[in-house]
Length: 157
Ligand code: SF4
Image (tube, rainbow, N blue to C red; front, side, top):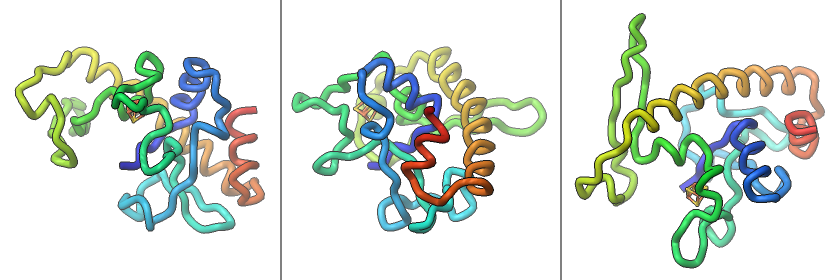
């Protein structure tokens, strides 16, 4: 599974792990990710549209240990904090609508009860950070070179 991340996620992960952003993320195209074409997560590079996501090694997140545990749990990205739920905010009241993904078997599907305050807090933070991230991607598309190393410099220098 590909885990998209925003720049704030990457900064927190870099701090928690001591790993540089260029080694935390990879850029994945439509062969690897099935996001809607209209999603603002896509960034247009000279190699085509890409999504910035946690780098995978041997098909797994680079932070997954051999024992199947997260090695950066305290600094994990927002997507990992809200998984396996998809949370959208509806209408003027912005009431959260929560759905459980059916992508994978997970403890939550075996009756585990989420700490909803934490899950919703993570989703609110993600929403704010994503809006800023999308704006930065659009600025880079207009002024950048189209090279992903330059995008990393733009986001993290
Ligand atoms: S929870 Fe940890 S190991 Fe799992 S995808 Fe997120 S960062 Fe990677």
